[in-house]
Image 1 (cartoon, helix red, strand yellow):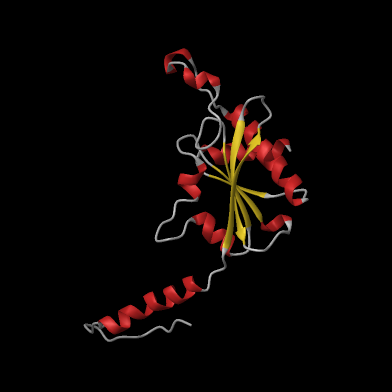
Image 2 (tube, one colour):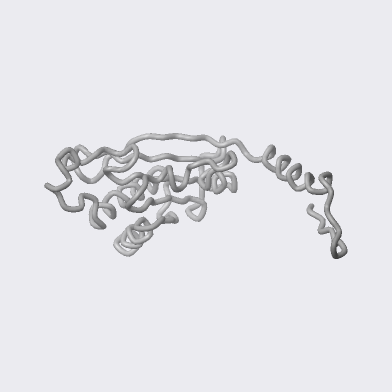
Length: 176
């Protein structure tokens, strides 16, 4: 419990009072549930392309309702890990959501992070237009969604997108 302290104008708060919130935060962090982490590749809809998946969830929990399953989808600049699983002060957004009892996934679409680089990426940039456009990204996100639905035995999950990942996951929702 946090108690608000009123102070008169011009009064200062001493170091002992300022330290209390940090102690409360440290105690709360110590009680957070342990997480299980799994990273692996799944096939995309196209031959030779593998998609990187990371999953975090509370240790020992193997069954989740659809409303407790979340897939993060990155945008056009960075892979999913740098947006959703980058620890700041010891905890990432992915960790935080998993510690709330969620089964959390992230996916890297082809050409990003741990996923396969398409063959076009081996050529000079001048020889190619954009390689991973919305159509390709939607196909990759759709493969990740299908994988998670099958793995967890549910008919729907939630998606959260960052930047263009938001647009891409919207297409998956309306096409599913």
